[in-house]
Image 1 (tube, rainbow, N blue to C red):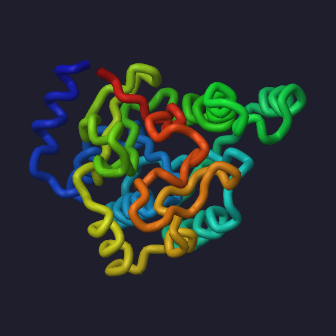
Image 2: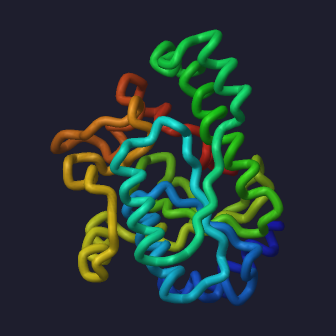
Image 3: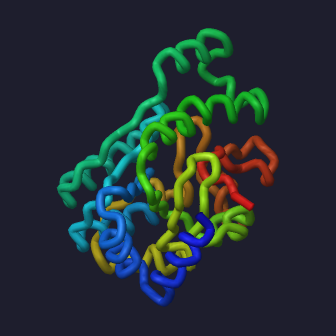
Length: 235
């Protein structure tokens, strides 16, 4: 598999994000999947996929705890781009069991309890969503957190047994925001209210000037633990 990844790196070398997505479409077609949470990076990729008339499949995870604004931008994205986005949901019995045993806010109790909630609402549904695909496209950028800076723009995801590609990996936040405005791309209005990273409503807050990009996610936890497990570093 590493040889396949090195081959892809050579193929995609020097391509911009749009060209990279075109090449992925040529090589993998509908065997590639893009997971969107409707953040600004994901909206840029959706726009590029639409421009390319790509056969990449689009999926999203509805955890059941999303902001109303996230549903707003989801709907606007469907209206504008006319591309189907398949939604995946947590297993009903798993959610019922969690809430029955620990209540609706157990994620505040400990890192372990929060990760349990993330697993039920995000990680397990994602495994179902990307199963059978060869390529998983994401909106990850290197400067979103220290952990993500250790990733590569093409990598092997051991847990999901899939190649991950991050077309915007080397983009800055300013470049993403400029692209959004220049191309009139719909985005979550919470971004204008100090929310650079938007997840589940109970687990996300706005940040203040000088705070880390992901300080608003699981803000009650230590900074080093601020990942849900969707994007583990494979080394």
